Amino acid sequence: MTFWEGKKILITGGAGFLGQKVVAELASRGVTEDQLRIPRSRDCDLRVWENCVEVVKDVDIVIHLAAKVGGIGYNMEHPGELFYDNAMMGIQLMEAARQEGVEKFVAVGTICAYPKFTLVPFREEDLWNGYPEETNAPYGLAKKMMLVQAQAYRQQYGFNAIYLLPVNLYGPGDNFDPESSHVIPALIRKFVDAVRNGDPTVEVWGTGAASREFLYVDDAARGIVMAAEHYNKPDPVNIGAGMEITIKGLAGKIAEISGFTGDLVWDTTKPDGQPRRCLDVGRAEREFDFKAHVEFSEGLLRTIEWYKNSGTDL
Image 1 (tube, rainbow, N blue to C red):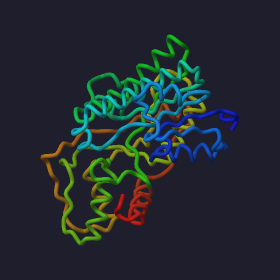
Image 2: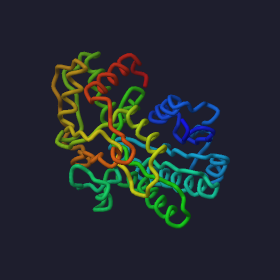
Image 3: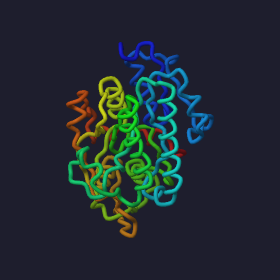
C-alpha cells in the first residue's frame, strides 16, 4: 500500500472491461475512491487536447487503458478511426501528463503491435522485426507509438513512462456485441445461442489454423498494477499466460463447455488474422514477479456461465 498511499490516480478506460478490474485490484491494495479519477468517454473525449490537459491536473499516476478496439471484422471496416482515435488519445495524454509533471505513466499497448510473422514465443526484442498483420496494423501501430513516445520522453525529459503488451483478454463482462467483439466472446455467444435455439450448425470465421494466447482479465489487471508498483524501465513488457491454442481448438473447447453438439462450418473466405500468437512472459516474472493464475478452461467456464446468466441483450 505504501506505493499508492496519498496518490491521485487517473485511469482512462476505468469504467471498461479491463478498467473495472484494475479499479478492483487497486481497491484490494487499499486505494480509496477519492484517490481515483475515472473519466467517461461520453464526458471527456481524449482526442481533444484541452480535455487531456484538464484530466491530468494534480494527478500522480496515469494508467492509460482507454482504446477503441474490435475484432477482425471491425478492424477491417474502421481502420482510419482505429488509427486516429488511438494515436491521438495516447500521444496527447502522455504529453499532457509530462507537462503536468505526473510521476508515472503506465501505457497499456496491444499484442497487435507485433510483426505479422514473429517467432514464437514472442519476445519483446522482436517487436520491430516486421510489419503488423494487415487487418489490425492501423490499431497496432497507433498503440505502438506510445512505446516510441515513452522511450523518447524518458531519454529527453526523464519522464517515467512504461509500456505493457497484454495479450488477448477474456472474462466475465467482456464485449459480446457481434459487430465488434473479439474471438472468445463472439464464439461463446454463437455456441450458447445455438444451444438455446436448437441450431444444428455454427459458422466460424477462417480456417481455424491460426493460434492465439488468452489471458483472464483479472490476471491482466493484477499484472498492470504490479508493473505500476515495481517496473521503471524503458523496455516493453509482455503481459500474458504463456499458452497457445488454435482457433479450431478454441472453438471445440467452447462448444464442449457450452453443450453444443452440432457441426462447425468454417467460412474460409474470412481472414485468419495473425498466423500465431504466443508470448514469452519471462520478463514480467523477472521484473515484477507476475504470473497468470487462472487456468484457461476455468476462465472459459466462468465467462460462459456469466454470458448465460446475463441474457442475450448485451
